[in-house]
Image (cartoon, rainbow, N blue to C red; front, side):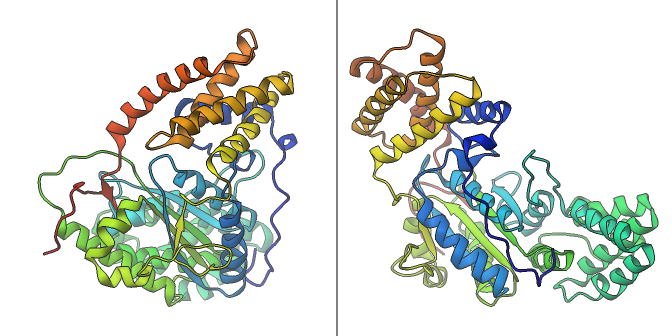
Length: 455
């Protein structure tokens, strides 16, 4: 799709008829085993965040990215189990409907800490993907996206016209890193010429893999991806996307929720990371990341503990913090603790959607009253117990488990005591998991629960 093509409206909300049994069973397996959202089919089980999604779609994806060629950064905050990853999946689904590329990246201490720009670039370059079709087919990775674009042009226009496009378009593109531009053009030429050894070398370079400087120079590129040029590489990647014929891209950065130990306060690493984040926000503000939306998901501890230590970053995210809503669409922070539905109604809506998926998954036809009575009783018990953290994820796991019991055992309406027993058994498991995975990292950097002073 070319840049001049107007954005197509999203399709109608997904209906159960669009699911097949295998997809429905995958959704139930994913959500029942760990309470996490499904990779595909998120629209079938989503509830409670529609007002945020409408603002993201209309004010940012449609208007800012597809029409005005702008960019924006949003911080998404929510406690453990509040649905941060779920929300990012929902935004990714919106982006796919608008024919945008997406990259969902987990910021983690070992593989992708935010204070290592080279690792961040590598993660985005390897995870960026085109919209998936109804059958879930995927094309992921910057080199594969470029290859597909080149091969499509060869098939439509021929090799000579494609070489001309590479020489006049890609090789002269205004990208931040000239080495990145040279690698893209060299890779595209290698694809046209069928030079697979050169394509493999430059493809690895574009993915951010370990390529020696000697190998890079042999391919006509005079630097390699590193922490020193990582964010420049990321900017170049984003700037390239429209030149490949896509409307733009959405980068979804998700903080890993892992408990780590740290002997020293990571002041230096955190300071470097905050500088990178501030730079990223400024680049979005200056539209130097054209046609790009960046969402970064963290816990509220970030705004409570980290922001006050860094006034420059705090000013960019608002002091006091401004939360996005329909009447304040420009606010920089999305708060997933404030949803469209109050807790019990939210659980009911989620439960009803999961019950519809379960009916399709197993060709199951229970009495509506049986399912509804159990759902309403469970929602009441869970909201009364009011777990300290993760009650939505907890509810999803327990409800899928209960649906299996209703389907496989003798169907009945469970008593309040029976439901409370199930809740407490599941609560013990969730509490144990939270003890092992409660967040105390920011940007993939170990962070002590006790606030520390900035040097």
